[in-house]
Length: 476
Image (tube, rainbow, N blue to C red; front, side, top):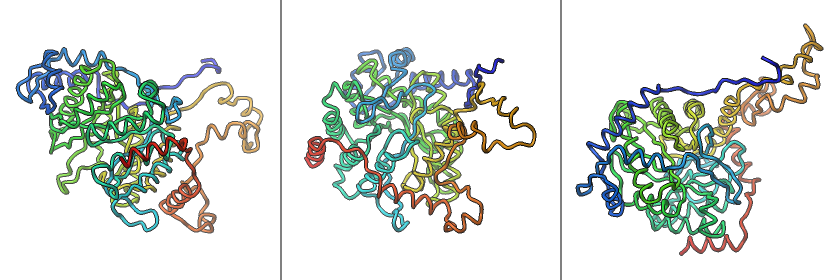
C-alpha cells in the first residue's frame, strides 16, 4: 500500500448475524399479526382500521405489509439543530451523539453529598454543566423538578433547559396539553412553527406501556408531533422477566412490536414525519426486584436494538453512562465506562442517561462530568489510527535513529495534541506530585470540576423579550 493512502477497519460491535435479524423481524411481524397490541386512543384506532388493520375494540392486529409501508416512509436521517439554528446532529447510520437522561426524582447534592429530592435548580445546574462540556451533544433534564406544581413540572423543566443551554434538547411531557405549551415555547425561540419544523432543536421522548400497549396520552403526543412534523423518540422500556419475557430474544421481540406498531400509527398520521426507534430492555434483578441499568444484558439488548435500527435504516435512541450504584463510586465508574463503550461500538445515534445512578432514580453531577471524559475516550477510540506519510513518520524515525529520543522533535510538537488524548480529571501524576497536590481521588476532583463550572460557565442568553415570553408561558 502506498503511504499516502488510508485504510482503517470499521470499529464495531457485531452482536447478531443477518439471519438472526431476519428471525427477530419475522417473529415481530408474527406477533403483530396474530396477537396484536392494545391501543387506547380513538384517532389512532380509526387510522389503523381505515388503513387495513384488524380492530376489535382496543385490540389491533397489524398485518406485515402495513409495517413494511411504515418502514419505507419513515426517514432514515433526521437533522437536528441547536437553539441558534445551526446544524448540531445528523441522526443517521454511523453517527453517535451523547447526552444526559431525564426525570430522576432524587439528586446527590453537590455541596453535602447527600441524596435528596430533585429540584428545578438541579435541572438548571445539569443544563449549565452539559452546556459547558466538550464531548456531550444534547441535553435532557437529568432531574425531576419536585419543587414546582406537579402538573407543570415538565414545562418548568423545559424552560430550565431552554434558558441555560444552546445544545439540542430531548424533553418529556405528561400529555398533549404539556406538549402544546412546550412546542409553543420552542416556536417562540426560533420564530414560529415553520422555522421549528425546518430546523428542529427539540425531540420528544415518548413511551408505549409494556407489554404491547399504547396509552391514550402516549399516542396523542405521537399524533400531535407527526402532524407538526417534529421529531419524536418512541421507545418501550420493558423489563426482562416482568413486563417482557426473561430471555433477551423474547424481550426484544416484544419491544420491537411496541416500537414498530408506534411507527405504523405515526406514519399513518403523516408519512415521512421524523421518528426515532429504539428500546430499553433491562432485566429485573431476581434477588432485589430492581430494574438493573448496569446489567450486561441491558447493554447487550440495547446493542441489538441499535443493530435492528440499522437493519431497518431508522435513527435510534439507546442507553449508556448509567449505574445501579447508589453512590458515585467504583461501581458507577465501571458500569458507566462499560456501557458507553458498548453503545459507541454498536453505533447508537442518541446515547442518553449520562449521569444516572441508583438504577435510574438518582442523578449525580459528578457522574455526568466523568461520563463526559469517558465519551471523549470512546470517541478517540472510535476514531482509530490515521495512516499517511506524515503519521508513519519515516523521515523522523530515520533522523532519530536507534537509541534516540523523540520528545524534542518538531514532529512531536506538531502532532501530539491530535494523536494523544488529553484528560482533565484522570490522574496521571507521579505519586509524590499527586500527594503534594492534595491526594484527591477521582470523586473529589469531579466535585471540584462541577463547582467550578457552575461558578464560571455562563451559557449564551436568549434575547430578553424571548426569555420574558417563555417565563410568562411557564407561569400561565
